[in-house]
Image 1: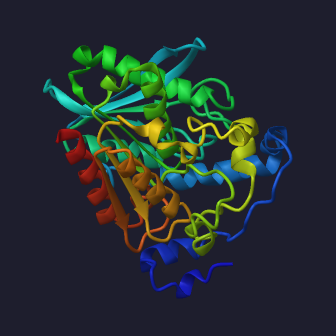
Image 2: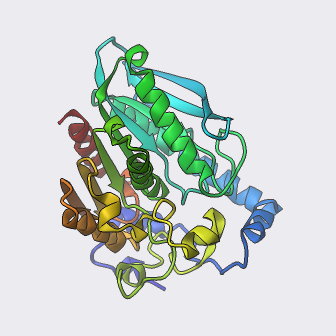
Amino acid sequence: MPDIQNDVRLDPRLKAILGFMPNLGATDVSSRQEILDELAGPEAGVAAGAYQQLVDMMDNEDIAPSKGLTIRTQQIISQPDGNTINLQIIRPDNNDVLPCVYYIHGGGMAYQSAFDGNYRAWGKILAAKNVAVVMVDFRNALQPSSSEGVAPFPAGLNDCVAGLKWTSENAGSLNIDASKIVVAGESGGGNLTLATGLALKKEGRLDLVKGLYALCPYIVGYGSEDKFPSRVENNGIFIYTNDNRGIHGYGISEFENKNPQAWPAFASVEDVAGFPPTVISVNECDPLRDEGIGFYRLLLSAGVNARARIILGTMHATELIPIACPEITHDGATHLVNFAWS
């Protein structure tokens, strides 16, 4: 178990938050169905309610003012599956043609929603810095978002790509500069950000995006502790990475087949060659830190215009917890918005 309160690296404000959280790891499972059965039980419902209360606290007019912004929901038909998904569109209340941050929420590709309080707040914080924000509520692998159904890979990735294509095709009516669309996301959304790049490359459609920005990307899935020692060093600081639930929930066969569109850590130099400018941002005290750095180094070896950031004193996805360290949230948002404008 990590000694969080005596970890000199962690910001004291994060130690205080973690002090109220149970420090429990998860057990391995034998199948995706086992997780679905757990989620159907009463204990899961109680936990989900407590989570919803927590994240909704992060969206209020003091933390993320809505003044001067327009916020709406757009339903679209996702291809190739023909399902309906929701996009949350947030932008300054003007007719200026702006760059777009196309944002993919976290949650291990399996949980959470772009309409959760912390993401509503994050979207407003970004948009207030003078960009259009389109947040895609893709099909999660295990627990429903606002969009219909749950399904393993490639459902969520298909939805993310479909929403991006819709955004590009409708850039004119959205007052978005189609030449300045950046795909971004944290954790599982960081996985899907990089996977979207891989999928677009395979289609020959990397022209749709100006850049990729992955925060604390969750791209290994399971194992590889020797290669990525932060998975041991920081395991249990906010999140655990030593169980197999992620790979079973998203689709065990894709992990076993080393599919880089499901788990981008399997990508080769050839897979990422030709990527647009890409930023990888990681947190010092995050179990996922080293896999993000590893992907950054892969990008460099492929000749991609890549940059990396390590945010000292932070745990996994600190930027997306605006009540914890607001200046870190705003610094991260400013860096992302500047990338979109550059």
